[in-house]
Image 1: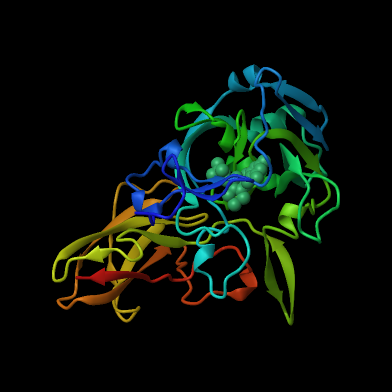
Image 2: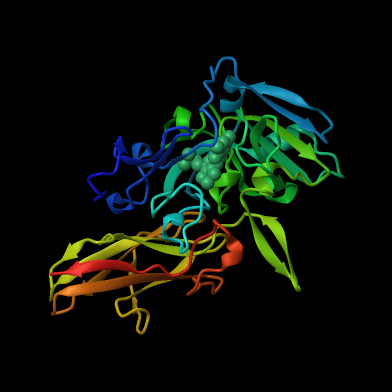
Length: 358
Ligand SMILES: Nc1nc2c(c(=O)[nH]1)N[C@H]1C(S)=C(S)[C@@H](COP(=O)(O)O)O[C@H]1N2
Ligand SMILES: [Mo]
C-alpha cells in the first residue's frame, strides 16, 4: 500500500496539483480493466471546462471539404468499443538513477480502459484527404505558457501529430471510457485514442484535426516527448511513439514483507507496442535464473496481459529481489540496462523489486 505520508485523492497518489497529475498505486491492480476512478491522470495545463452543447470539432487543412461537427452528430456516427492500455512515456521515472526532472511516476502511470468512439478514418474520409497530405495534427483545447526556457514565449495548445497512415489505422475519437461519458480529467467530451502508442499521442479535449503535408514540429514532439536516436556518430531527436515492451509487478510491492519458506503469489501485467505478449518470466536471484509466469485471460491487441507466479520464498529471513521480464510475438524483450539516450522517457529496462522476507 502507498506510504502513509503519500497524499491520496480518491485512492490515487497526488503527484502534482497544478497541473493535476494523479497516479494509481500499482499494488491495487485487481483486474484487466482499470476502474476509471483508479486510472492515472496526466495534464500539462488547467483542465478546460467544456460545455458539450457548445463543443465543436473542426477537420481542416489539406482536405477537399473542411467541416465542423458537434457532439450529437459525432455520437450518432458508426462507433466501436475497444479495450486499450495507455501508458505515460514517463512511467517509472522515479526509479531512474541519477534522478531526472519530470513527474516522479512510480509504476502506476498506466491503465487499461474500454473506449467507445468513432474511427478517425470516418472523419478523414468525410473531409476527403488530398493526395499530397502526410500527417494529421490532433489539437486539444487546453493551452498555456511553458516554463522551459527553450519553449515558445507565448501560449501553445497541447497538440501532437501522427502520420496519415497511422491516423487511418485504428485511431478512435472516444467519448466514453468504461461505458460512461469521459470524465473531465480524461478529456471530456472527446479524446483521441492511439492504440499501441505512448499515451501522449492520445490527445484529450480534442478540438481540431488538421491534415497537413508538412511535418509538424510542435513542442510536444520535439523539445518534449522525444528521445535521441543514434544516427552514425550523431544523434537526432525523434518523437516518442510506439510503447516499449514491459512487465510490471503489482504485488508484492517494493518494501512489502512476505513470510519465509512459503508460497507467495506474485502478480502483475505486461504489455508491448504492436505485438502480443508471449512470455513473462520471474527471477528471484538477480537475473541468474528465470521461471515462467502464467499468462491469465486471453491476448487482446493493444492491451496489457495479466500474469501470476507462485514464488517459493527463501527459508531464511532477509532481503530478496524479484524481477519480471516480458517477451513478445516479435521476439522483443526488455533491456538489462537503461539507455541514457532515452532521456526521461520510455523506461522499460529490468527493474528489481526488493521485499523483506520474515
Ligand atoms: N489535450 C491534452 N491531451 C493529452 C495530455 C494533455 O496534457 N493535454 N496529456 C497526454 C499525456 S502525456 C498522457 S500520459 C495522457 C494521459 O491520459 P489520462 O490522463 O486519461 O490518463 O494524455 C495525453 N493527452
Ligand atoms: Mo504522458
